[in-house]
Length: 493
Image (tube, rainbow, N blue to C red):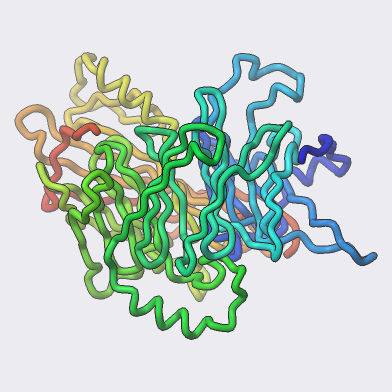
């Protein structure tokens, strides 16, 4: 049901305060809007950060649930956040609050789902989840139901999938699916068809769902199975037999991650990471096209992100590293071509902080594609390359593209990585170099350490910007990659 907008009565300084750094209790929830605003869960609040400057813009605390006793109840952990996919309004600069487009969905461990207004820092709408017992929410995704409206898909508890209408007149559940005894892990929307999305489970169970309207009979469901070795999961399941039956997958198995992503280049293709396997799966032919096992010494997979401009996969690992995989020409076969550190091995606390989430900033992709189409400016012998200018593509060592990746660690830091791909002109276009530029901003708690600047052959960690929070963050690519000629360099921006 909808509730009246609540105004902030506290000091404006609370806009830049966090209750504490993010943790695994927040399930690594983070999302970047089309305009580059990063929202991530931190304790019981949602933090909003400018992904380019790494400045904390605001925080939105989720109010605690009503308490039956006289003592106030604590707010549960926020476990998922998703920006609304609606385009920007023409009256963006209007002072009328009702025209605000800065809306996002947030869910917590008590199963509550709210639509938040970022500008007003308040809850606009509570969805009628009607969960009893309280089923914590694992993941959210916006799905197109009609040309002018979206519904919200949510994984609640270990195996429940629900679709919710977000109309203020009728915020109700329109569809439910129980996948027991599976543990559902994440939801992703198809970039080629916003009506289509998939849901994957920890054992390889895969749902492919198409929404043709806002009624239950308009939802078309197909089931698939991706074969994987689940021996480790079975052992963990036996050890966690005493866990609550209403807990989501990330609460029961916090270090057993199964994630997937749709290919932005090939329709019907998804990339799935099990803890020790990378799988390429074809939804149309319902078959596995490729499987790669992690070599010894590599930490388990945390997440997989396809490059929006080139046929590269960026895979985060639980040990704080990033592996880069390239697709072989004319095949859906991928080979690891580089392994980099997402956390510096020097200058950090012991034990080393953990990477919680990784996401790609897509705000520059369109500009880069436009610059490639109109890239008929003559190149100069030795121009100064500006990595912050998406139109700076003129060089003898031609900058083909660059990708911004944002990572969040449990010590309250947000890292901004710039992965740039360079290729030589004309005759030597086969030779490419991959450069990574890292910028980091810290969301520190009260006890902050002095800034450090540590330089190594692989990474320079410096320029830490201080913010405060309170007690307690199907098209094919024309690029050709040669692993022998590919180098990865990391330095502070």
